[in-house]
Amino acid sequence: MTNTDSHQASSLCIIPARGGSKRILRKNIKDFLGKPIIAYSIEAALKSKLFKEVMVSTDDEEIAEVARKYGAEVPFFRSDESADDVATLADVVDEVKMKYQEQNKLFDHICCILPTAPLITVENLKKALFLLNEKDADSVRPVVRFSYPIQRAVRMSEGKIELFNPEHQNTRSQDLEPAFHDAGQFYWMKFESGLRGKNKFGFEIPETHVQDIDIEEDWILAELKYQLKQRK
Image (cartoon, rainbow, N blue to C red; front, side, top):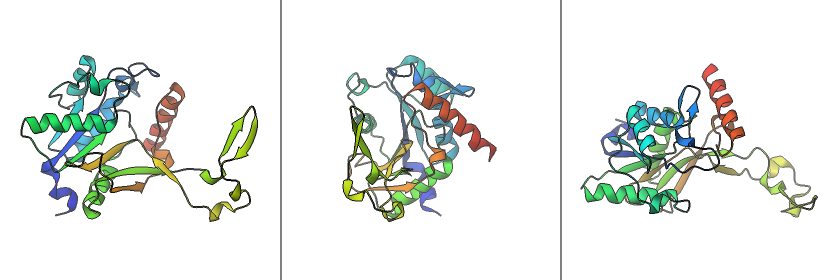
């Protein structure tokens, strides 16, 4: 029995999807190549068979209806505090944990999958759970390598540019340490620590499998990447 198999019955999937997206209106249920974008996160979670329960945390009746249509549960609605602009992902996870604890429903692990992650794969969900157990980590997430060395980043002031790290002006690119950023797809974590634990691990996924979606141009790129991925 693998590490992923041994924890199937004690893992909770949380998909946080509030209704108040501003830059892309109704982003979490906007049509993405034929179905609401949140459907891709729900379907990946269900297909993985890693979870005892797949739930959507929302403050919005329409999102709840869509979530249930695609197989997720919405056992309660999000509070006003965790649905505002300043609430963090950790705050949302903590609230969901508290609600389940009040019902005396406990889990070993939580996976928080973002609702706008159509490029997510079951393979990566399983890999991250394996790492969570293997490394005894508090949390594990996919990360992406920056395509250009961050040590060569520049600042601009009225058109004038200067390096943030001028000491690397003449350093060869291959001699600079690679840097990574959060892929913004999902986070596996221990139930007790949530996203507040300090022992964090990551694993690299390719840039073609990731797209942060904040503006309409991002949406178009995500659709193109999804279609490219489907052809392989």
